[in-house]
Length: 540
Ligand code: GLN
Image (cartoon, rainbow, N blue to C red):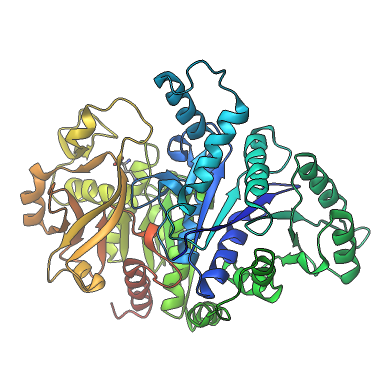
């Protein structure tokens, strides 16, 4: 427990996509492994209030927290690495900052004053920077600043960082600049110039980075480190190499080798409580890298050309694979490619199939065709959110004889609306932040597969949807062999369905992938991979 948090800012230079989220998470992991409490927050420079309204093609997956915040996918990394939940306070956008300031202005809180970027927007950013630190729960608050230095949008955030650093002093707030050291193949040389320029740019905003973390494809020789130190005014031992890693989960160990955590502790005048305790992490990595078996699982979705759209699902498979000592190969399948003529070619031979979450009607018929195939062929199936809903539609159409059954998302006039919009959703007209969001309780029926997998009757899982299983048809479904084995105890919404006559067929209305972490792989994914392995050996 700490009353005064130390602040670490992580900025990015030269290009985007250098992995600020992974560096922040890895540093957080190392500090946590030394016995400190850590949280990581992300500041995003775009004007959307949150990424909930962004197309996954634009921005990758929208990550949902327990408290129902729709957030940037980097928060998923924070949770997967630190194994502690994040919340709305961990993700702030320019849109939210402006919204707060403008709301205050309308209330008259700035009466008489001209409301300006400096100081009002920057003050609001600073208030948010301090919010989690002031809770007294964290020794360290790591602040990832989205975008790259030089973007117009990032300016108010960098000004806020400059001010916080000035106000708190160099012993309480430091800046880590993540940058790229490109390798010119023709010259066979690593180049420091872009980094020099990027640091100059930071300096022009009044920010001197304390530590440089350098993304590189090749090891950084001493003369390059010296050059960077001299031209960027950082200590030689604060030039940290971040070499391309085999997996993101190697990065904490690579950062440990480069002593990033030690540099941070020394700059912030903190005494290490202990050496980082990373045994479990290393066991996970060891199993991940030395699989004894392998399975291929099809991931059927609409946005498969951008794997970031299903980031948490892909990571959950990595966790579950390691747990099962198996390599999970994901075959990314566009639901639009599947129909009754292609389904056998595309799905035949897979050891398991996951039908992904999603929105809108595109590709729905392909998902239904895929589910019919795996149901009939007895291939292990996990349906998540829209995937579960399509399993319900498929069963109604092809087993229960309701050939016109559908979800009202696809066909609002369907004769059999087996999936329908939730009552409370029908009145809602705005899109942002209005779905059924965040963690809800679900009660599992004893004797079900889900109960055996979770080993508990009461679970809490995160949601993000507007439609639900239509309870009007529940009795008919149960009679026909599709069982509602998980139900919300307050609203009676169906959360988990299973098939009686299938070795492993589970649909969940919630998103289990959001709660899978390195140290706690999600039981449903672990169970699914296990079933796929058994299926491969024909003993399911
Ligand atoms: N589109 C569906 C709904 O809103 C499913 C959402 C999802 O898969 N996250 O209910």
